[in-house]
Image (tube, helix red, strand yellow):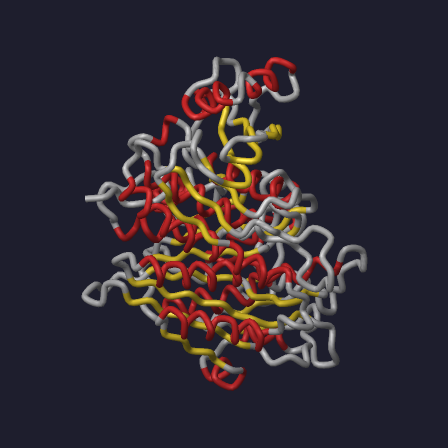
Length: 508
C-alpha cells in the first residue's frame, strides 16, 4: 500500500473514503465539523442517534453521494483529555481494515487538531498503523475471503507543517513494514520457517539494508562452547543457526547495544512433550527472533547514530533419538553448568548462549526478547509484556522511551529469592524453578549469563507476541511485538535531538 502526504482539505479531497476523528462527549470540531457541515449534519446525526458515541475506535460509515469523497468513515478517539498521538496508529489501522472489507481502494486521513505541533509523530503513527492494518493471516489461501484491497492512503496536510509530516511518514512506513515483516515470519508454519529459512530471511534483510551478517553453523557454535544452545537443537533433524546482524551507526563509539531474540522455530517441548492441544501455535515461538531481525532492518533504514548487534539463536525443539533428556547436564558458553529439569524450558537455554555471545562481541547494553513463559500470560494476560532487568535506571529509560510506542511493558522485580529457586544440587543452575513466579525465575536464570556491570533487560512477550482474536485495528495472530519498542529504544539511546515520545526527531 502506498501512503503519501497531500495538501487537499478534508472537504475537497477526492477519494473513495475520507476518515475523520471524533471525540466523545463534546461538540464536533476540526475536520469532523467541516465535513459535518458539508454533509448537512450527517455526522452529528450518527452521534446523536447513539450509533456510536466516539469511544476509542468505534466506527460508523456515512455515504456522501455527489461529494468529492464517496464515503466518510467516522472513527472515535475517546475523550479529548485522554488523547495521545500513539492512538493514531490504531485509528489508521481500524480504518484500513474496515474499509478494505468494503471494497474501498483509496482512503484519506484527516488528522485531529492536536496534530498541530506534533506533525512528525502523528504522521509516523498513521503511516505505521495503516501499513499494519493491511496484514491478514490468509497467506496460504488460494482465494482469500477477506483480501486487503486498500491500495493508497493519503494524509491530509491542511495547515500543518508538511516537512514534518513527510519526515514522520518516512519513519512510519519503515516501522509499519518492519512490524508486518515480523508478523509474516511468525505466522509462517515451521515447515517453511526452519532455522535455515529464518537465517535466509535475515540474509535478505542484510542485503537490502547494508547490515553485516554472520551465521554460525553447528560446528562453529560447538567451537564457541555453546553447549546450552546446542542441547536444544540435539533432537531436531533441522540444523541450528546462530544468526548475527550488525549495524554500525557510530563507528567511533565503543558503545554497543545488543538485541537478542529467541528463535525457536517450532517447540514440541522436546522429551518433556507439550500437550497436543494448540501445539500448532508453537510456530510463534520464534517471535522474539523475528522481532529482532525486523527491528534490525528498520534500524538500518532509519540510520540512528548508534552501534547495534542483533543476535538470534535459531533451532527447533524436538523429541528425537538424540534429544537432550531431563537430568542431563549441559555447559553454556561462559562455563556455567545447567541441569535440565524440563526440556520445555528451552528458550532460556538458547538465550543463555545468545547473551554470552553478545558479551563476547563487546555489548555494553543488552535487551533480550522471547516468548518465554506461560506464567507471563497468567500474570499479565495479553495486555502487557513483562520487563525485568538488572539495572533499574536502564529499565526506566527503556519504559520511558517505549511508553508511547503502541506496545505496553510492565516493570517486574528481580529479587534474589528468584535466583535461589534456580540453584541445582548437581550443577551451577537448573533450567526451571517450579511453578511459583515462573516468569521471574526464568529472568533470574538469564541474569546468570550477564555480568552485573552490563545493563540488561529481559522482555517476556509470551502474552503479547500473538493474539487469539482480531481487533478493530489488527488481524488475529502475530502482532509484531516487540519491533516498535526495540526501534524506539534504539532511537532514544542514539540521542536524537528533540525527540518526540515515539522517537521521531523534530525537524530542525
